[in-house]
Length: 204
Image (cartoon, rainbow, N blue to C red; front, side, top):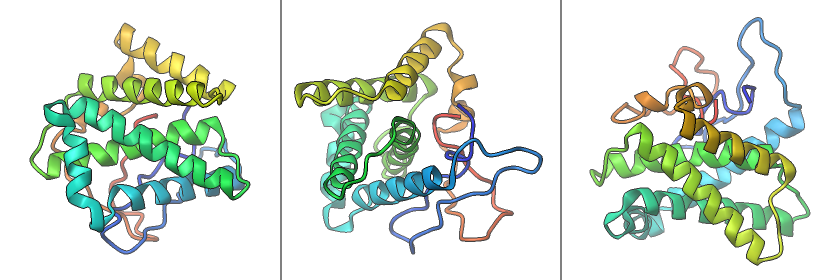
């Protein structure tokens, strides 16, 4: 599932809105369309605005703490944000693709994990992040099924791929950099700042 979509994480919402687009690495051809990239960028931007809403930051951190279970809190918050962004898009006549839901959702999960870590609530391990990804997908799927909305074929396939990777120990191959996530400094790249080291979304 490598591609242009997840080559760059969104910047912090507390700073000026960042350009979430990215260029394909030299010598590689992007495997997404400009429309898909634009949809991904908008999805992540809208999700980050919800995640970093200064008016509700205390409430967000409390929710992320999960009453002492930050892995569960992380999964619940990210699943809720994904569904809120998706529902808002649908009201405007936009159908978000399964690939964008997965790529964007896991990007938001990484950003939410950093928010938890920066607040001194919890430092996530690789296993915990993998568990949170699967838990968030299960929460999303269960909620959508109850609403009579089933995940797209692409989303369902990627759910199965992630779950299989966690079970056979190949999660790092599917999610490059996940083992280096804990404690690393987040640098929000500015538009055109190609020299800054880029983080990938959780789906590599």
